[in-house]
Image 1 (tube, helix red, strand yellow):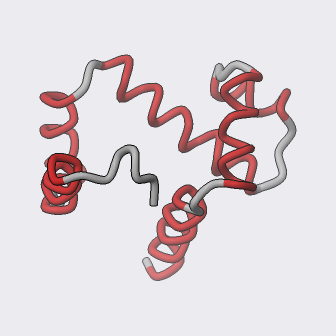
Image 2 (cartoon, rainbow, N blue to C red; image 1 turned 90 degrees about the vertical axis):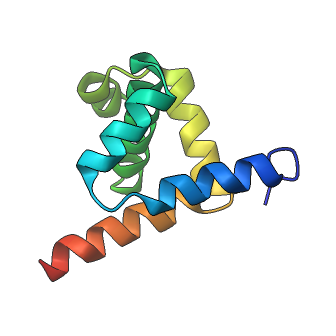
Length: 100
């Protein structure tokens, strides 16, 4: 866990996010919390991570998501040397879809 971001305020933020029960509630919170560009950037990074985990090429990812190679490279670095947050989220979404 990154000690640079771990603090009481961040804990409260994540508690608020975890309290959302539906996608619509997430939209409500994030539309108030972030700019449209910030939400789109986060969504883009998640899609880049999912595609990288499927072994897609940088060219395929850039074409589909519009992400720069710098963004793709940064996400790839996180997938290999990060805290496994992307992997955890991707795996949980896949598992949930398989149960449906």
